[in-house]
Image 1 (cartoon, rainbow, N blue to C red):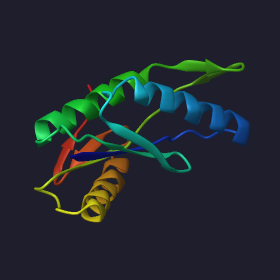
Image 2 (tube, rainbow, N blue to C red; image 1 turned 180 degrees about the vertical axis):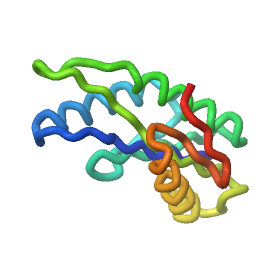
Image 3 (tube, helix red, strand yellow; image 1 turned 180 degrees about the horizontal axis):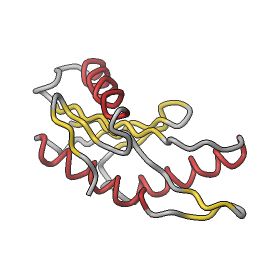
Image 4 (cartoon, helix red, strand yellow; image 1 turned 60 degrees about the horizontal axis):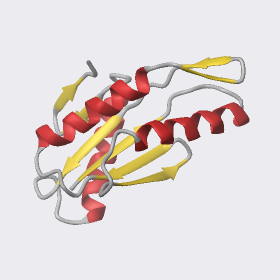
Length: 130
């Protein structure tokens, strides 16, 4: 399994931000398969469990797909919204054997990815979106 954690980095009023988060969730759902499990983790953070992903290359391919889908701007009311995401990836069993270990590792990678803004990171490898 792999954990992807996506953070919406948008500055907006609360109503606009909530609409943007809902739109982000819709786009996120269009990037994953039926057996994958997305959830809103809190605020503008999401976790996606990918049970059929068993290596780093597959997990990073999903992260790239998410970046590509989120990169397209959209309109909410009269505002053009551009979403950037910082994605941390953890892969079972390399990065941990338990759910909490994987989530912690994905969380740490996400915070490292934030320094690159709109990027994905796993372990010590930084992977910018295409």
